[in-house]
Length: 72
Image (tube, rainbow, N blue to C red; front, side, top):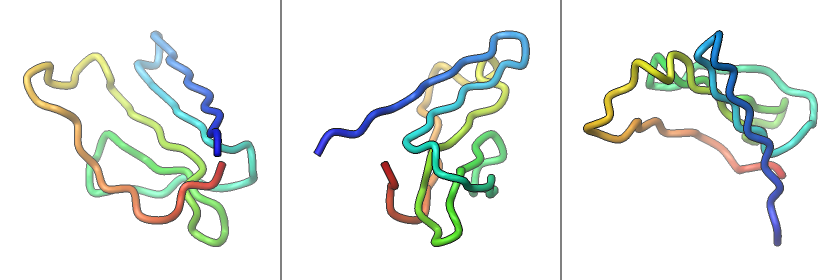
């Protein structure tokens, strides 16, 4: 099964967004203040966003747990 991704980076806002599905959904906080997940009403993950990308450490990976099934 192929999964199409849309990846958007807004340099002015310093914001990265990855979208797995255009299905209607809403943003939910994660355990990392820089990352929000986009989910549908059933809790399926539709995408995620990363804020303040240019301020992230280059010495360690950015880690967050996205809870739910990926909806493509």
